[in-house]
Image (cartoon, rainbow, N blue to C red; front, side, top):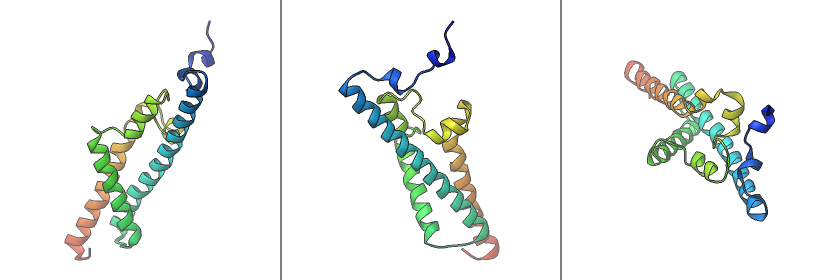
Length: 139
């Protein structure tokens, strides 16, 4: 009978041995770290758009958040609605391709719903800005 540890895949199981394997593991680790940081940046930007949309606050942070979310939307759409870092991580030998934040905090069935969730958060923030502008006359 195989133990749970033996049945699971990890970076070490999916990359070749030797110097090339070490380079691939380091590259996969770098991509995974970057993916995690970018997820936190994107989640923060989407949340800021929602909060500022509801509160009516307008500042440079909102402008930056809208720019970040806009660039991410273009990159995501241009890649067929799939994060390009997921594809890169998979090619480098990561068994899931996902960032550490989602892997550790969410069940697998929710990991693929993170991007659509934050898209809706952003859209709700933009809708709140539109409502404030239409009803209250403030942008």
